[in-house]
Image 1: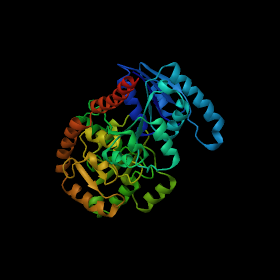
Image 2: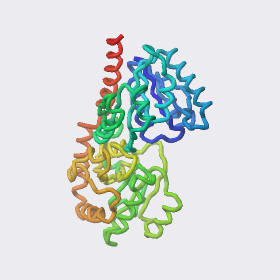
Image 3: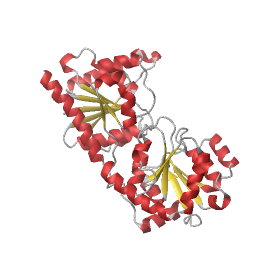
Image 4: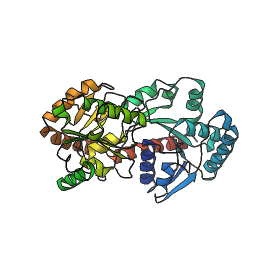
Amino acid sequence: MKILLTNFHSGRGGGHVTYVIAIARALARHHTVSIATPVTSTLYAQARELQGVSLVPMDFPGKINQLGSMGRAARRLRQLITQDHIDVVHVNGSADHRLVMIATAGLGRRKPRIVFTKHNSIAVGRGLANKLRARLATHHVIAVSDFTAAMMRATPYGGCGVTVVKNGIDIAHFSPPGEQTVLQRRREIVGDDNAAKLIIGTVTGFEWYKGSMDMVAAIAALPAPLRDQVQLVVVGPEPSPEQWAIIDRLNMRSAISVVGLVNDVRPYIAAFDLGFVLSYAIETVSFACREMMAMAKPVIVSRYAGLPENINDGVDGWIVEAQSPASWSAQLAQIVADRAKVAAMGQRARLRAEHEFSDRHFIDGTEAVYQRLVDAKSRSA
């Protein structure tokens, strides 16, 4: 098959980048794979390192004052699709989906099969724009969680068919660290004075919807003797000035180790005793949660969207109500008081990752969707 993956993000792109890179890297071994994305994107920078993948620098303009740019981009995309005889276009957001719809209009039998992955929990309206994309530019939908699938089946895209293919990770890449590595990482990241504390961490940063500030509040609400036994490590986007002001009002600055953006999260996850992903918007199933679990860290997740699908509550992690830091404090107090259970829960998290989170399931499921569509097109022709 000849596959074109598109992504419109011009900057970081978050989980979209991880998703597209994983598909491209795996499928390029057996298929012809291209990626179209802005040259300013993280995806473009990372895709340059992939062997056997063609990289197409392309913007996906979509605003009303960008009609001229949109027309030129659509013509270029149409030329790429027809000249390269693309079989499948896999779109990952509204902007690239819209441009693919325009670019493939009127292609008839030359039209590739178009797959749309819904990556977030943002509601899909029943307005004209979605009805048009569903009818004219969607042959099938991939949902990355059961929650997302149920949401999409109730939209205009439901008639296109929806397949659940949950995000997978490289289990070997995210393998549990040895005990000596853990001790070394803890000293490097939080210092010798804090290395013996219970380290609670996340790699989702301080994005407004990720719940990291709620975790700060939950730890701050612990009784002083328990609070002094906890160190928070946050990898990813750093706090805004307003968030730092709240942290200082809670007297929590010394209890937080802020790492910032990094290329490799594994050394930091290695230092955690447990992780958390406490989103209350946008989130689906979370690569971050699955990466931490693969490294034998139990994870606290909010009861939001697809996050609970990762966790057996009380077995390999904890499920808590979103945006409820006061109630989390009681859960944290239990965890601090019974730290011996945390490591055993981490081992069960690793086992679950091995059985359910493998990128092999993810890649095979995605490839199967492509192949079904291409085979159906061949039969109809």
